Length: 85
Image (cartoon, rainbow, N blue to C red; front, side, top):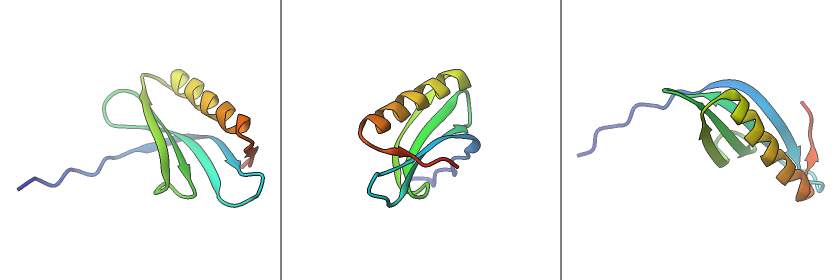
């Protein structure tokens, strides 16, 4: 019998960006989180945090911001529109 895994604690550092489809609808968000151990996790989610699209752990906040910007550029290239705050 497997032991239950402890809940993974993440602390929000900042919201990097929010975009939406040109047709409207749910907002896609990218946020940076402090996670246990070393590093920062960059997470992108559709709607609320349960709609996780992807995540990647990096070594520091500078690298996390660079990755978030690359993801943002990719979303804009696909036709998404900045949603602001």
